[in-house]
Image (cartoon, rainbow, N blue to C red):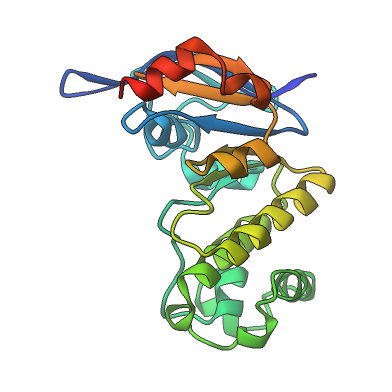
Length: 243
């Protein structure tokens, strides 16, 4: 299986603390890969290095065969690498539909002009319907429930027609019905050809959905393999029980 994303010797130090410490890992194309680990293991920092929100002190990030180390988040988004955040990031004073159109690369001023292409408006409409957000399309994003904001952020990253989506804690703070909804959307988009890398603490969600699973501890991977092997691996058990 070819690697869509490769991280080699990635290192990030904050005030003497090695948040990411020589981490090397790969994400195979057409997989739903989990990145798990105890609190403080470096998962969010590694996500930020991959997606251009932080620049590594050392190491390399390759995406779709190209070196993208230190490339800014906007450029990566346009190349097909996008992400969500643990706390959903949406534009609260724009409508739900406007949030999607902005995610397609338009300025706020262009939202109300003919310069927004019909294809992008149609794509936004399709995503609103798919994510069951069409009934609230004209509401401000600030009026949505927390779970709906999570769905809106997920839909927004799909406006770029991505190759790889990084999901940061997609089930955090949402109810069981919304977890099932999120899982269904991941499966549907994966079936359509999108690769996923998911940071998640809900192990039942990970075990149902993800293969392979990468375990991070103290800033570097200590295990990569099938979800069924995670629960019995002594290094993984030690990392969690000893944290």
